[in-house]
Image (cartoon, rainbow, N blue to C red; front, side, top):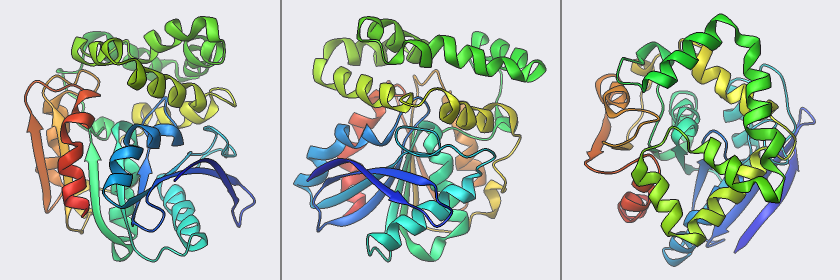
Length: 293
């Protein structure tokens, strides 16, 4: 089952787009995609999920893919959207998986709806900006400080670097280069050496800019400008929570991600030597599936 372009009109009249893959009768898990990404992340793991009788459902956040944009949409608002979708799909309890910037939504589920969850998984997770440190790449830190002083510039930067060229086939390589600019060589080699993975990755990133840049800008603003996520990490009272992070992750250095290990109760945090932001996903996928089952 690969149904990649489904939509639901929510009670507040927003359109929520989502994709399903894997086994339609399998154990359900909701996927929260990363920044510059979309519901099409399910294509990366679809075969593995189907082989193991898992049903994976990924939503497009507001303004991403086919989902309606809504100003000031919070993490907990996204949790409510997922609950409404779960009800629509007749799913009572489920697991959640967040990749990169999407991990904050998985953890928001753990905070707000622990009674509806079976487990939480975080891959290459971001953390609230208050915990960023000097291990962040210099260029990233300089850009972050610049945007915090002149926040309105985030819109033209995202438009010029991503949205403007995302839908032009002849500029795919330039678009991809901008998306992965800050990543380690090991991640760039993964895409260069695996045409199928590169195609899937490009498609999910291009889809995130289908409507323009607003959806990704809204997500990036949370990461760049909001000191916390609207809740304290210590306030999460749920188990089990699993997190994996690569030692070569340049987007979110391991020393930054370790804040989760220090502050989230009951979390099982595993650092993988020699893995990057993207390669980590493929390295731990079998282990994730084992824990899901």
